[in-house]
Length: 125
Image 1: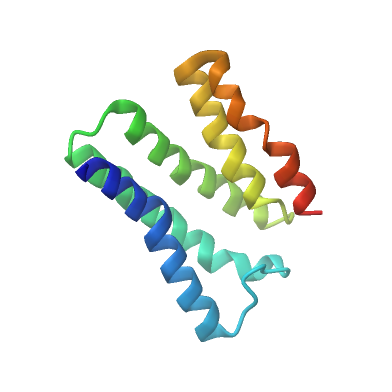
Image 2 (image 1 turned 90 degrees about the vertical axis):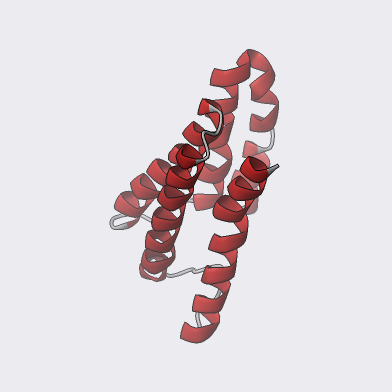
C-alpha cells in the first residue's frame, strides 16, 4: 500500500498540483501552446520523478515499479531536451513510455495499453 501511494503521489498528484498552481500564478494556459512555457513544468516533473524514484528505492519497491518511475524521469528529461528545438506531444510520450515498459514486463499483453496511443496522438492534433 505504501509503495502504491508513493508511486501515485510522485507520478500524478504532486506534479499535477504544482503545475496547476504554477500555471495559475504565471497566468499560463494549461495546454501550454507556446513551447517555451513547457520548460519550467518539465524541469519540475524531472525533479519530482527523480525524487519519486529515490523514494521507491528507499522503500525497496519492486524493481519494475522503481524502473517505471525512472522511465518517467528519463523520458521527461529527453522531452525537455527535444522541446528546446521542437514542440512534441508530451501526452503521447506519457502513453508510449509506460506501454514500452509494460510490453517488456508482460510481453504482448502489455501492448493493450498501446492501443490508446493513436487516440491520444489524434486528440493532440
